[in-house]
Image 1 (tube, rainbow, N blue to C red):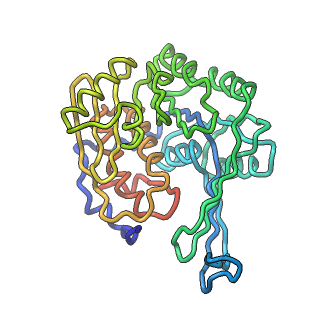
Image 2: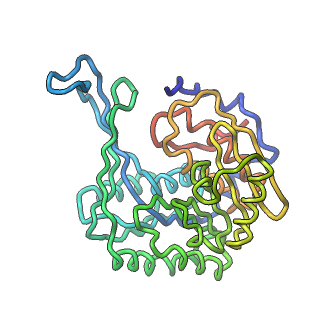
Length: 326
């Protein structure tokens, strides 16, 4: 059961990273986000009775809200942290595509959205008294022509950005992710990946891959202890030629694996209210910190701090530089 939200001043009680948050350098950075774009739609209401038709609550909806989700939420977080960001992804030929474009423009996000025959992905959540009661997904996999069209649209954009972020929600937009990683590497740009599934060969050559605990289990199998995890993580890194592997581990914090070995930070959340979009915030914070010149260790510390704040908010949310300040 979710806990109470963290109070607005909760960030003051979190451990400060060793480095200074590089706000000025972040403002000069340019980040390209490519991946599965979606809308997170929320219907809020109250529950006063159970339906006579079935044993389910009746929600009297009082308001609704659309938020950028998936790769678009990564871009939203990057913009909120002060960087210049371009969002590339697939949308449908539908009304929701217009919602994505309007919200992106309102958040200061430049976009290169490619229309596909598949509908724009929507995750609709019904909440009663701030408690999620139901989620309904509207989605379909894009065809190969749409994926190829997105790749062709993105490749010329890479040279004009400092960091490329690849947000994979397994909705199909990153069907040619290997070509994007190769192009980023050839251009000398960092490529940061939020992965899905157990086929990590498709992320070969990325600068960083950041699975959560469950995704890491899919990739390397169940580990016995921290030493076993270290061996499996470094073997995966070596096999795929990945510079850094960051495993986000919920209440256990984050563990970074590089040529230097293992680096770990403990979780900082006081109480968890909603973990939706927390991985997006982590990826966004890593991207802006690396674009601003911080190393992997410092970027992880700031990402961990951001995660500790965002899980105290309802739904897919953003973090601002003011909230991150010690």
